[in-house]
Image 1: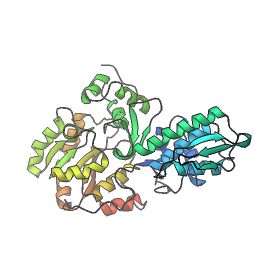
Image 2: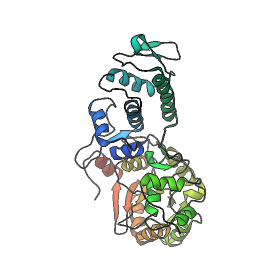
Image 3: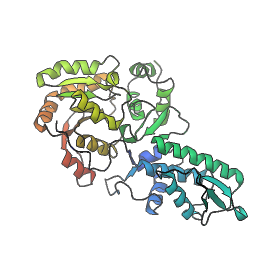
Length: 225
Length: 150
């Protein structure tokens, strides 16, 4: 076969590519296509790899999916108002994926507004940031660390299912059993005809419980022998 | 020509690769299994691995839709690896017997398409009833939204 120069296509191998429905599956249960499209349309995520049209799905990069996860957490868990602190969040999202990472430490500024100290000592007061409690800031700092770790490893964890990941470098980010190229979708497909022990027999090296987690993620039942 | 079954396909005893290897020899095709050779390989390492091992084709599978995976296949083709994608049909699973059955059923046409295309790389979508062929240029056109796989 011919040996061609590296891809000039939509992505390089290892970068990961996601449809919006797949993004929502990975960031389950609270993520919806509507939210993702709204954040795309309002420029919080940058341009998609491919803009969707009728019969042509929108394609997102790993970076964009990670940003969706960040926005989701800040909005749903930490109760940040996107409308009020849009500028601040855009800044945080930008920092998150900078090659030169400055660990961000959040603090309460005058009147409870949010400030940030980077590990180079730079202090930034987020424009338009809302007032927050100190506990929220601690949670924010540790969340941002966790997200940064996912950016560095290019692996997205799947909530509540520790054996599963979306690894940008494995099958372009399709949900898989961590450390393998076994897709959760394949486990679901096998479960159409095979029982639990037959599926386990096919993957003797997969960690205990991982097949069950894949089935749970896909919403399928594993049948007893 | 050597074809490599992706890690999640085949069985621990390489039943699919061994069966296809026997029938494939008539068509100058040889089959191997990634799960026993190098499990856990990352996408960017596949072209390098294939080059080092003299492998020409990766046999993969696709279950939901082609949306994101097309970009992966395009990148593999561009790096010199042809791709055969198995697709399940209806309520049938891609269990080991079914993988072997579908690939055997279309072995002749798969071999013809791959040999005709060489030295260029192609994508073959294979299910129980058909084999659909795409060149890299056609695939790029489809990804751009110009044309859809039937």
